[in-house]
Length: 466
Ligand code: ADP
Image 1 (cartoon, rainbow, N blue to C red):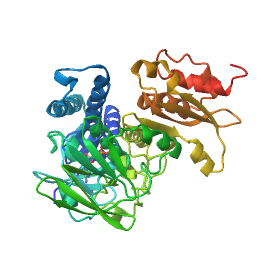
Image 2 (spheres, helix red, strand yellow; image 1 turned 90 degrees about the vertical axis):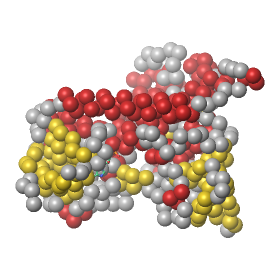
Image 3 (tube, rainbow, N blue to C red; image 1 turned 135 degrees about the vertical axis):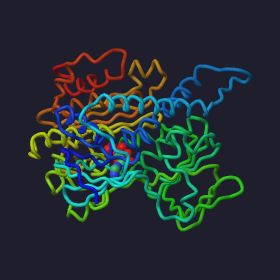
Image 4 (cartoon, helix red, strand yellow; image 1 turned 30 degrees about the horizontal axis):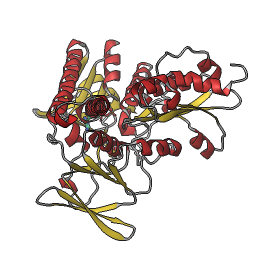
């Protein structure tokens, strides 16, 4: 067996939960090794997640906006050049890989090994590479192995595409289908249904329960769903039991209300959720792994204080930007000798469902407060009144802010409609920093932008003084 190399920090994975800490610690002189079977930085976000899916989304968004005001050719029909959309998506991914590669090449004390890491003991990590096995003895370890698509054990499930087949570099899906069935009404399924409907695809979405986007604020969902493309057919309470290949396309068999139903479409997207990827040997160390992922404290430590778990693998807030912040929290605590000096605020991470239009939320909403026995003050703003929404002719939707009644401190908010994805950043920052309705009311939000709605909503609570 090869002699182990002793290093300061090893990261399992090189995505958002890993590389911010790796670079931060390396800049401070720590010797860091990142391990990832992809052999590149940025994990699943860039490989098949947020970045490429939003490249497709924004092209679909352009098209939807463009269609309303322009017409070309005979009959004024705009055709979708899907090869160009995929080409653009691939270019964005390549460009970002190049950028990450250059950052890595410029950095001292940090190395990326293409391989799969597993635990031998609480400090010893084995890495299987194309050229053999390497062993590292690390003072600190960050587990950031992310999550992977969950494919349920349904006969024929292997015939379906996954989000990876839609969005990875040089994807499997190269030709726009005319019909698409989406299995799963979580955010990946609903977003993809929305993007492809905007590109002109006839989409049917099958959801097992009676609710889409389960776990998210019901008032926000109730506002969002009627605003989504009317060409999407939503079939709720549908239990898929089999998928079969037909001469043309795939047939999905499902049960609904005691009866058997079937649907034929060119392609089927399986979007039944994601599961944390737990490295080999981790559970043998006695580290707790729950249903959502590896159990951590707010310092991102597992039950072994020198082993951290950041990003999707801990299942707390499975979003890239949460992983980045968690990674830096772990780095700060490693630098402090595994003494928690920095902690993660899991409650104020903004989340966006990037449908067209988008819905976004942060903090605690009115419904969540009520479930916890609290009553919040609610302030609203309708985009029908908003100048930017009127300029775009996209006046559907609204913004809601929730305040603690005694202090008027902002506790949470949601937005459905224009710029929801951007607005939630400002609302989140205000929430995370404990700003009050008075402070929001006194800020000169830019005109003519939808963020004016934030100050407007806050002032509506204070009407006597403002
Ligand atoms: P996060 O944003 O939570 O860091 P990502 O899914 O973006 O998560 O990145 C996780 C990365 O971890 C992926 O690129 C994946 O290839 C990698 N990975 C998964 N299992 C292992 C393992 N056993 N060893 C090394 N890397 C791993």
